Length: 180
Image (cartoon, rainbow, N blue to C red; front, side, top):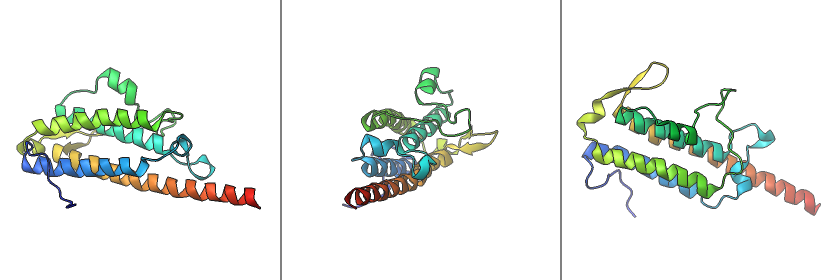
């Protein structure tokens, strides 16, 4: 298998390269969580102090959704805002997701990823220079936004991997306690 940053054949070269970075990280995330139990998906780390994998995946989907609509130059439809949002809860934290199956969370994220893929088929390399509103009054190019989607996903993959490590260690400690 040869790894490369090549987009779909109908995408413009730079759009395709950026798309393929997002696609690669998206597929990597799915492979990281593929065998998770519900308990592990909802696990919030030692002393329940961190965001669960479920929360992180929903957060990624929501951020990506916002980028899809920034690129389109449209507000996020209320129906999708209600389904995936908000960005933060009243405590300024990633909203709690609990008891939602991995299949449902990934299916929801697939919906967003497919919207993103569709928009990439429509984008030209020249349009990557377009400046869009970002957060807190900042602006960014569409090119930066697509790169950010890939980078943000990879960033939270590290958190998911850490949660998996802690979960496994905690389970092993519990087994040792039962044995002794």
